[in-house]
Length: 230
Image 1 (tube, rainbow, N blue to C red):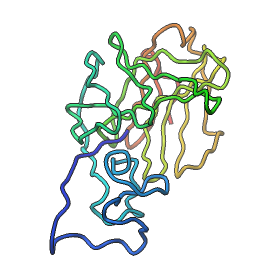
Image 2 (image 1 turned 90 degrees about the vertical axis):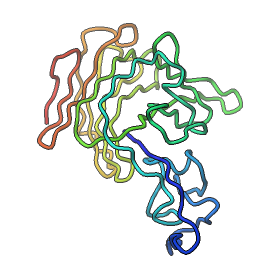
Image 3 (image 1 turned 45 degrees about the horizontal axis):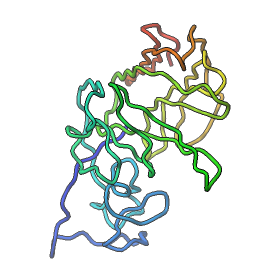
């Protein structure tokens, strides 16, 4: 999960020198997926490639760990990435794709997949937490979208800087099943995955999914029942 705080760049003689490896100018200092840009869509911690950006201060810093319980009863609990100003206390979640298909509705964070007629395909949503942490316990109460072939829902802890990930995933047309996965350095080793029967239709009923991450172990828990421990 990702977070950041907004820092003003130093001016005059204190300004950092551009990295020799960067192809970006000072006006568009941040690199995301190989493209130069500015603002939260490019400079947000977790999206910004610090090694390829203009200098060492281009990417926003992480905000750090905070205990919190988000009930999604306020429209400000998630904001489109273009409107994020760097304060996770105001916006604990950021919708990182454009167009923004994440909305708050009746106390729920709803991630929508909308059909794009001009591209003849659907476009989904990803909401990223604004705080970061290293080790901790995270629970999400989720109703999945496992109602159509090709649709994947996911609850993820991820470090985009190094490509490490711990997750729950639910695939289309398998509504009673949850997958537990872990990856490192963006190596998609599917032998790390284990599947479990939840005992109910995850697309029609809510369930509590917990990832408990410590220096010694990773534990995946559903409705208080431990499914897997590494």
